[in-house]
Amino acid sequence: MKTIAVVCQKGGVGKTTTVINLASVLSRKGLKTLIIDTDPQGNVSTYLNQNKTSELTTSTTQILEGENNIEPIKVFENLYLIPSDVDIKKHNSEKIVGGSKMRKIRQNETIKTFDIVFIDTPPTMSSLVQEALSTSDYYFIPSKPEFLAVEGVGQAMSFAKQTISEVPHTDPHFLGVVLNQVDTRRASYHDFVSELKQILSDKLFTTHISQLTEIADSPFYAKTVLDFSEYSKARIEFEELSNELLEKVGL
Ligand SMILES: Nc1ncnc2c1ncn2[C@@H]1O[C@H](COP(=O)(O)OP(=O)(O)O)[C@@H](O)[C@H]1O
Ligand SMILES: [Mg+2]
Image 1 (tube, rainbow, N blue to C red):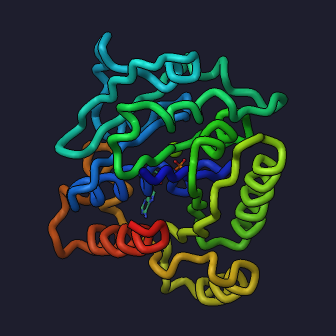
Image 2 (image 1 turned 180 degrees about the horizontal axis):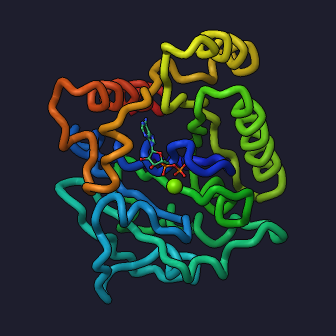
Image 3 (image 1 turned 180 degrees about the vertical axis):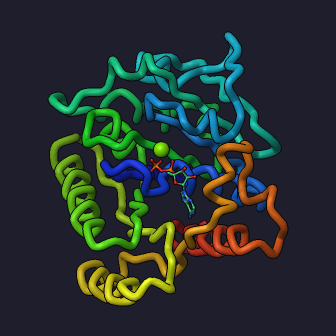
């Protein structure tokens, strides 16, 4: 089992989009994949059109409260979800250090049946993000290719480093930055990438995801890139990103 947290305190950078589409593509490849949502907004459920939670389903809030009998939602073959809800807010604080409540699931028999687990996080620097980092073997940071984004990436990396030093048994490996919503026609793009490469060296994913209207529209229609044609740019890019990710985590 490989557990990967997707983090950035900035909203709208593509955390949920990359989680949903990578998880979809990897589950289609035959890997048993789980998404755990830790964002009170519960966007993963909305994106996947899974709003009818039954009594039997376990939520991330229940996990934080010690539930051991874990029952994820089956979204489709090989893709499962543990949804979030607004109640999770009571576990979200920027003043306390989090990280001891969720990592217990790493020993859970149901969770251990998964090949890959993605943890989507809220756009904050809070205890919930620390829970996600502490539960994970790896993390990556999606970013828009904009001038100010360099600062955002730096802050996300510092927060992760601080978490690693403050929270016992926490040492996720940094996989790098995934550039999302890329428009290579923009004059500043290439300058931006060379600046970022100087700071990050090999911690920048080779694959980027373009700014595409089909991705922008997909949450509205509850679509993932698997619903697009095999030859669509969005699908090809996410296939490539998933291959790069698999290589980085040794799967
Ligand atoms: N590559 C992309 N091209 C076009 N729109 C995108 C792309 N990635 C994300 N979006 C859109 O941007 C918005 C924010 O993305 P989201 O994944 O929800 O960000 P986050 O989870 O970091 O807040 C969403 O409406 C999403 O559809
Ligand atoms: Mg999100």
